[in-house]
Length: 226
Ligand SMILES: Nc1ncnc2c1ncn2[C@@H]1O[C@H](COP(=O)(O)OP(=O)(O)O)[C@@H](O)[C@H]1O
Ligand SMILES: [Mg+2]
Image 1 (cartoon, protein in one colour):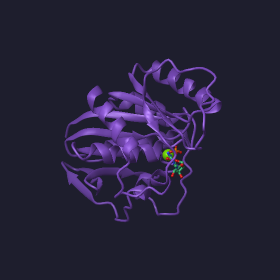
Image 2 (tube, rainbow, N blue to C red):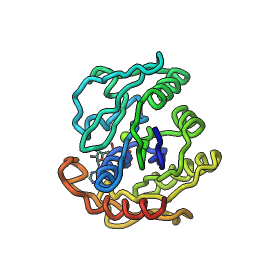
Image 3 (cartoon, rainbow, N blue to C red):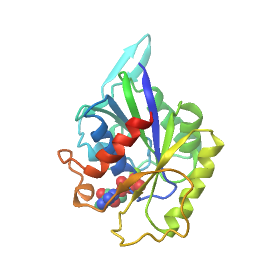
Image 4 (tube, rainbow, N blue to C red):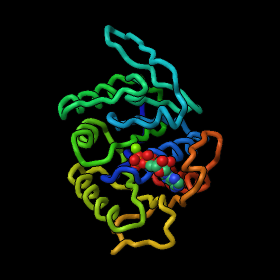
């Protein structure tokens, strides 16, 4: 198994659109490349819902080690804690258990050869970040923010955290999730802007059969960057 580019989609703030954007970009890039998604939000997984997966996991045993087969939807390989637990079951792991759940999920998944693996990160800057940043060989980070002060303040925390791990930040995506007329950033970010998602019904009611133009534009930049 080889994975050419592992890209984490991050923001300290929840609800800014990380999961939806991860799914939209993965769908767009999968038209040309082999793509996988690891949903690292083990407390609040979403990718299995966005990709409408209802199957039970299948396991493979190789040399006495047990692996999980990723789920496939729209030709994208997907692994999410939401696929390993009962649908309405909430998980309440503490720090070390959380790290080992994330580690198991990423180490036990038998991915194919992928061009891109996108990691849908949980909000915050806690244990999952440490595990993913230390143990996965990340190629890049993409940050997501909404065009307002609080999200902007939070993204600076994420930038500081990412810089401690020496993983390059490809840039940030602005998601106009609240359909604001204007940007209320108090200052501009020093990192590259990869593009923008406008507020749209297509994003709100994510439908796997809809092309999302904002995602296509950003995907081109991601492909050109790697
Ligand atoms: N550009 C957008 N336009 C409309 N709704 C959006 C947009 N981006 C995200 N959403 C909606 O906002 C909510 C939060 O998005 P989500 O992807 O779950 O954020 P996060 O993963 O950062 O917590 C979801 O209900 C999603 O459908
Ligand atoms: Mg999310």
